[in-house]
Length: 256
Image (cartoon, rainbow, N blue to C red; front, side, top):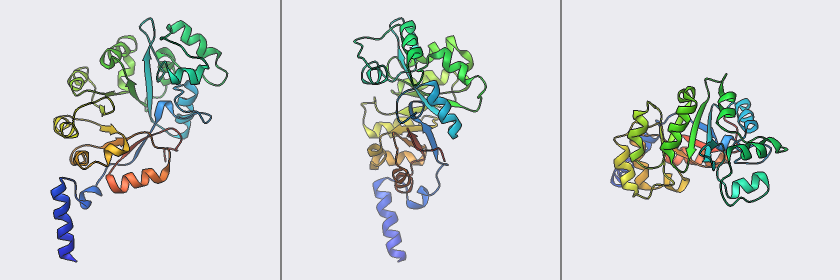
């Protein structure tokens, strides 16, 4: 039996992965309300009602999507294509102005998708809440825009970034918690491991299939691994036990 354990340890070492003993020492599980969290059975609303529902359920880390309007403002919206049509019932061929977006949001019968002002107002008495940003286009410009117009939000923001070149600039802005999310990154898995070795991160976020890769499992030596978007408890348990994942973006699972 001792020989078999030794052989297994050598096998793990050859793969460049963590050993089972190392995998047991992981951070507490963190559940993140994805796109503000599901509300009335609908995902991706990024609405005030979804945020409040998630908050009342016990979430303290909430991811919010931001999209640029036609007049250079940011609103809480995943995209102007399928998500916009799903929420508002019609298709737009280009981004709308902030004023038009807010008109539609106010008229929505079920919930109110928010802009920066509404988000800041909702956060005002919730210093324990953290907002994880997802700004798919012109990310650094978006973070600077938020800080310029709502400087008080810096204390609650955890920016996600998409390219390694963004890391230094976000650190220079004063952010101490950052997440490198991999869905836009086109480099190799090996480059992720090598580049992140020099970064001080809250986590790296990725798809479940990426978290299972032998190469990206090496991240567990230094960083937390988060995955998206998980809505089944048994999937969380499997990713925790087998791959050391400790953070999960979810639409509908409770935070506990």
